[in-house]
Image (cartoon, rainbow, N blue to C red; front, side, top):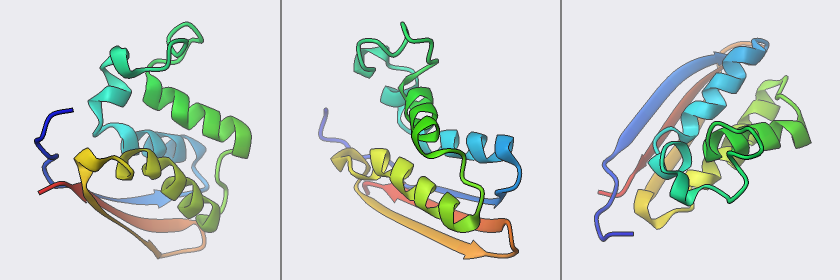
Length: 118
């Protein structure tokens, strides 16, 4: 890993947790900022591609969902998003991070996620 830091990245979206496909897509979006999880297969686990996963990011989300299920409530979504985003925010390269949820309906959340090393 080089000494450079990631640029600041801000992601904001509205998610309806009753839409399972939107939930899965949004969970995958969390990890898209890290090419080592999406494109650089040198950093994938040895068997990720052999097991049929598209990338390490795909594996992380699918294994989490297999173990915990697709979040069905805003509370479950917040917990799931937080746990999956830990795969990014724990890295020194990405530095600072902030995650905020605002419930705007029974099944709707506003999600703001910021990471960056600058």
